[in-house]
Length: 438
Image 1: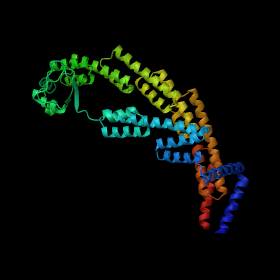
Image 2: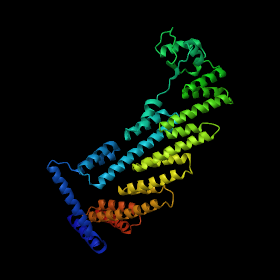
Image 3: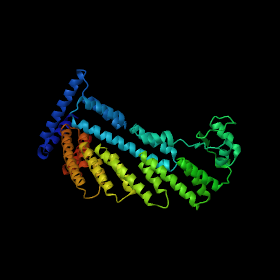
Image 4: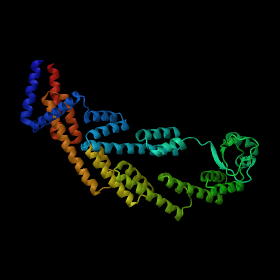
């Protein structure tokens, strides 16, 4: 066995003396690495935690997709060594990733919610909050919109009685006891004007099927005047199910949907606002202008994300703008700029494959993207050479499996690396010979 190892050592030395360049530089890098590790160990022996300790913890959390914990430890490392640009870049990149992943799950949750797949929607909203606990929209879905609506709010008008309210909503005055029960009232109560009541929503089979359309139209109009837009829209939808050509109901529903859209826009729920405006038929200049106003607000939001270096969030908003208005030049410019900057950020963090994926989504010929693509490809070749030389060091130390792994990484970064291809073949051949000798 000892003789076999000596023979193998001789083969390795002869092979690299005659055929490999850069070995001296590789050994120099190795010496520097050992020196740094020795320094870190000395710091630990004195009971002092170095930034590398926290970076190690952060990296472990990041691998387990516990990004908030990872971000915390990277920030601790940054506080200990504020001049380290790698830590600053890592924090910036991780913050961007947190926002991006949270936004992705928010979007998925919204789609499931729209399709009434509430279990799946809840999962994605909870995941969005796990990545970014400050995601207010995900929290709003969980706290308010995912809870099945079991009642309608109704504000008492002058001359209303419990029986008359029951007659209007349930087509049966005898169901007034439901209003009494759900509002903790006495049966003989005369509700005061302005009182807000909860009217429980009954299953269709519990409500008389007949619909007094003229009366329902008056009710919807009254609710609209009281700014109870969702309740008004609900009534008009019911009318249109029975009479789809009722123009008065269409007009009232359009008015209610428009006001809901305005409210959603004020709440910065721009995608939902645009979808609400698009429900209005036929289209009008007023509605088109409202949609454009919302798009302008989205553009402003995307620009702010760019300024804050939240590139993935800016990309998501720009994509939403282009889905509503594909010819929007400002949205496309923001999209390309955000893709380029995100690509640069990934390049700095040496995430080359992800950088290429991001940059290839941009419009062809975009100058910033072309430059960054070139930089990514050059960096990949340089990193490929570093891994190649590391493989050489492993080979000289007779660690053939580790050498093969490094050269495989070389080929991932630079598929045309001729030496790596050749050396993998030779190393595998030596392993086979060694097995036969043993």
